[in-house]
Image 1 (cartoon, rainbow, N blue to C red):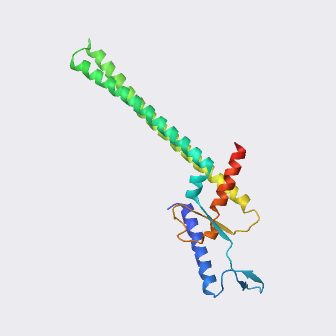
Image 2: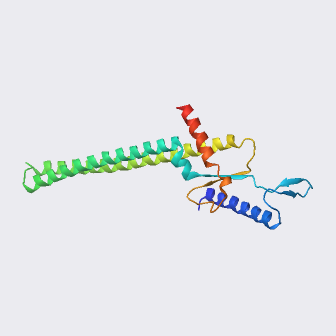
Image 3: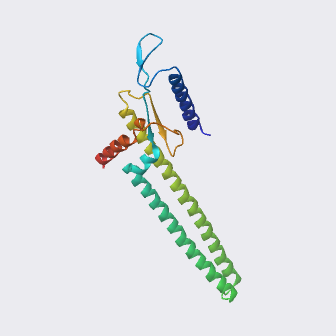
Length: 199
């Protein structure tokens, strides 16, 4: 379990404890509660959540970036497959020449075999490089998307109306919540407006 997940789980645990305390002290949601200083505060929790899956599916930047990433992966796979087929054909041609004693000397056959082995190693190196490139692009995209959403949420909550904004992806963190706390549609709408202005 990574550190980020531990922190999220800890924040969720604290939020649940606060909910239980508020509920079992007999206060009704939204009704005033006397604080230890004697002032009256609202028992309604200033929290919200965004559904990360919805953001990824509906935020134009995320959709376009994901499409580009998939296109890059498809191009890399096509390139590798084409070179693998070419190499396979060259190996088949080499084997046919060996079987028919077509090489004029043993040295020429060995030289051709070494060339093909080098091509095979080059192809493996290319496959590793392309995989590494895709992984780096994916990490960069994830960081860029995370920064964009985080920065927007800071601006969105500049007035401090929410004390906690959770993220939920495929019911990972929030099992059940009132839809009134879901600000996903508003966040996605504003993110898309900002993205269109940048384009």
